[in-house]
Amino acid sequence: MDLCFSCLTLILTLQISLLLFSRAAFGAKFTFINKCDHTVWPGILANAGSPTLGSTGFELPQDSSRTFVAPAGWSGRFWGRTGCKFSDESGSCQTGDCGSGQAECNGLGAAPPATLAEFTLGTGGLDFYDVSLVDGYNLPMIVEATGGTGMCASTGCLTDLNRACPSELRVRGGAACQSACEAFGSPEYCCSGAFNSPASCRPSVYSQMFKSACPRSYSYAYDDPTSTFTCSGADYTVTFCPSMPSQKSSKDPTPTTTTSGETSDETSLSGTTTTATGATNAGTSLPGTDTTPKAGSESGPALGVTGSDPEPDFGSGSQAMLADGSWMADMAMGGSARVYCPSALRAAGFIASALLILSIFS
Image (cartoon, rainbow, N blue to C red; front, side):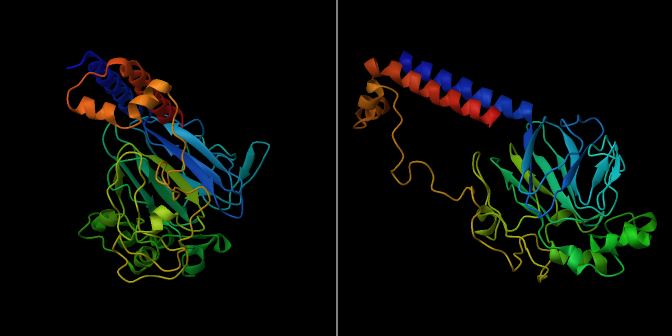
């Protein structure tokens, strides 16, 4: 085999190996976006054995975002707090309060009711994630995976359950909706005691109401089959009060397997309080969604599709060897790259290095 072609193969192999290593080492990026018409104070609780992500709670004004990097193997939960007032290291939140008296939760979890996003990142394998209403509901929330492989489905609850909440579950002046377990404390609602198994703890009329409105969210403790999702090598966006699902989530009612660098087409989730039939089906599409793409969404044409993107300039040698495709044809037939090989190596090295840098720091 031509020596130059061997060098090219070695460079690409090394770059791909470094790319995979960086994914395994850095785990995932979590980006929090606030689309509510008010400030949200996200809380972050790492499970035992997992490090903090640089903050345990922070202020997130309307139409703002913040990103954290989690290592491989990290696990924990996120939630949004509302109506917070902090001054002189003391204060509280109307919903989702963690009891710390400040924006940082310092290892404390959310007081129910609160909508929870739960994650367990893999170490070179699958990530597991869900949105849970087991501890009640206080905010609409959606979790979206990008750049991963596998099903990588979006999940969450876009419905404003506070408006549909039964009076016996409504708390905080209608700012949150309790679970039946929290409201009544009965073993059959809490899946405890004699009801501590999937066979004995069945959906209640209250959990079915939650499931009907938010078919991909956990509605009670043993709601695993339609509520836990997996993805590999993805970054995740947690959006509070999403006004509408992004185009990638609404254009196809069936989750599809994706390849690295792509975003899956997901089932649209409802943005209204209208319930749907077949609520326990995770692939159900609820009415009231808006398929208008968000600004900055990934719905634009891919580079090179329209023919309007400029050709990359790596020097006259590379332009000559790609001008009529003869160089590629010659290589395919076992010919030597000869004078064009140095340019090819520089071009391949530049592209691979750029991809590696973007994958780490983007």
